[in-house]
Image (spheres, protein in one colour):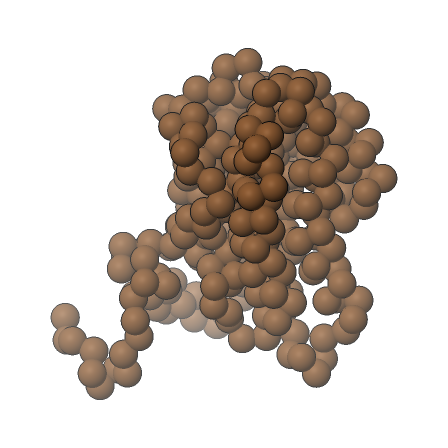
Length: 253
Ligand code: NDP
């Protein structure tokens, strides 16, 4: 277990999914967690409270920051959106929204919370990127570009904020079992086949759980990682490490 006693942690998009798991993990490790999200999840656990937040808006991020005191030591920029659209069908509004939530959001939040991080003697920022900041699924131009941007932002923030005692890293999750992905699989005609095919893509034999991302975030946020900054840690069960072969060349098991 990592120990965040006496430390406040902010988790954006913490109402559900990966953000919820991160908030739960940090609170279990004794952090006081402020969940920033568009809506009140209503059922947060001990040591957690919700403050309304729209990460796309500077007014909202500044108002949110006013609720955070100098015990702040961890900022997790997790809120994100994803949609599928071909380049032809995709609208400028969709593109701008992906960039506003996924890329401007982490930058705005870090900027708004810098005074508290500095006043508290430094801290750790963890951005939630994606393996789609490294490769891309079809019809994900905006999503993949925004996540590649998050990885670049992580490097730049590590360089600029390091002298202030602030480390900055990113996690790049692969396929994680959240409501978003479950809904996608559940609407397929052969759900079980899709689940089996997904498992084959992962050398570890299964897709990830939100808690797998949360434990990696907890490590990066903790003093155990005090010399780790500017890194993108892939959490994908080796999916992106395994090179693909055509079925005729794949070893028979
Ligand atoms: P979810 O859609 O389950 O959760 C995202 C949360 O962010 C929701 O609570 C959502 O609120 C909130 N949110 C959206 N827009 C804003 C905003 N403008 N301001 C504040 N909060 C906002 O997603 P996941 O948990 O699956 O994903 C979390 C992060 O992990 C994202 O950055 C995603 O890109 C990344 N990721 C996820 C992967 C996966 O397989 N699930 C893989 C790789 C990366 P609401 O529901 O009200 O819109």
